[in-house]
Length: 55
Image 1 (cartoon, one colour):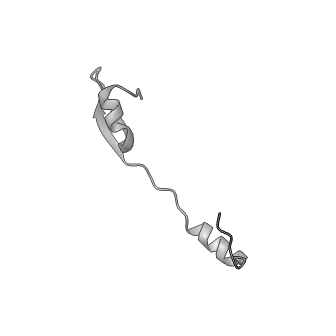
Image 2: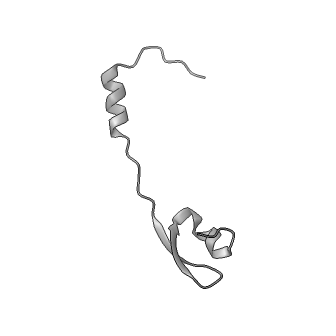
Image 3: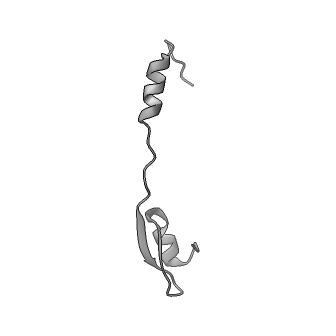
């Protein structure tokens, strides 16, 4: 694991952490094998369509 050569200042650490933001997930409208229409995250849409995952 890499080690830092110089300590990161408190201001730089807090600035970096304050700029991090969570993103809202993109929802997709999907038809399940049973015929229901549901809104699920985009990365799970294919699994719901095939019946592997039930919302």
